[in-house]
Amino acid sequence: MLRLILSLWVLVYSSAALAETQYIDDTLFAPLRSGKSNEYRIIHRGLKSGTSVEVLETDDESGYTLVRTPGGMEGWLLTQYLSKEPIAKIKLEKLTAEANQLRTQLQQLKTENTELKTQHQNLTNELSGKLSHLTTTQEELAHIKQVSENALQLDSKNRELRETNETLKNEVEVLTSENLRLKDRNDQDTMLLGAGLVFAGVLIAVIVPMFKREKKSSW
Image 1 (tube, rainbow, N blue to C red):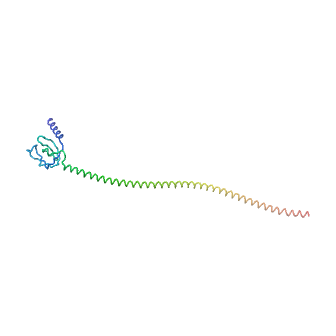
Image 2 (tube, rainbow, N blue to C red):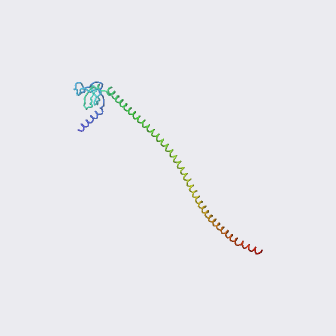
Image 3 (cartoon, rainbow, N blue to C red):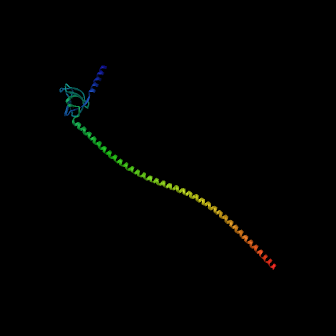
């Protein structure tokens, strides 16, 4: 039993190793037979040109090849109907499909290129706007800085003026106090002077008559 299993495994493995894909040649239809000669019955009336089949076995003596169709049917057909390369029609269709695919890709690339150009232009415009805004902001900051410096200078000047004003106010208060003191003193001096003058007048009024009497007496 083990030998039978090993034999079947070797047979399957050998068939798989020999299997390759080939194509029905430019013959319009290739009949598929149950055996490797014209005497065997036809199991498929004809495989269309360009059909890909899997080659399972090739018999060079009979000129037949055992193949498996895409549908899973196995049969023999003349080796001369097979070609390792696709027929010209299939090649043309493949090349046409590839060309169409390349055209589509080219169109997509053109579209993407246009979109990228648009994005690049938008980014350039945005960058230009930001640079312009940055320049304006820098100018505004410079102006604010200058105004701030002027404001600091004005504040310093104002502080100096306030200090000077306080000093002058203090001096005015001192001078006012001194003026009041001098005025009071002047008033006092005036009063004293008036009192002295009154006293002198009284004294003169008393002494002069006395002097006149003494003079008359001496006469």
